[in-house]
Length: 214
Image (spheres, rainbow, N blue to C red):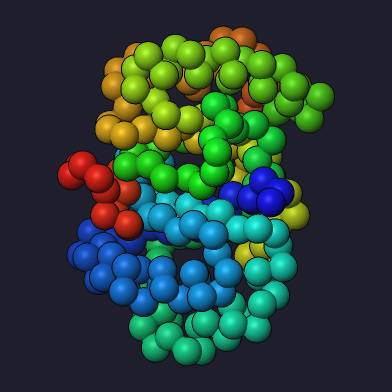
């Protein structure tokens, strides 16, 4: 099959609302999105971002957003509205995956921890960014990383436009990323002023349950 798209849904909730969200996500929302045709579904508690929850999905293509079951999901779910009303902020972004290194037999994303770097960069720099990331994967693998992914924004979600930068790098880890994994610093040092709106954060998976407790 073609390389899946990455779809991120971010939100910020008060600490008191996190536990009810986790219950809803695991027992209601995740089953719903799988039934709508999503290929993978995961949720991370993140540190260092302006939001504290980062949902990360893979979808075959954008047609899933027009699937009647997807369009009717909120109407079938009596718990979604009250929970979503408590969001203090949100962002939904769709990305093409242009680099997955190393190439897996199956491209599914499955990581207890992720580290994420986002930035704007001119499209004519994408090939050079590919090369830097592929080279960095050797160093990161020595620190325990399993895979690196580079995506760039494609057409927005039809009902949720995004304000996020064009580019996103996701590194998959079986454990908390160790000190010395400063990929944002590597990219900034290599591309300088060509990279703007650079931010970086990490998070541990809360759905599905991690292989190793956080």
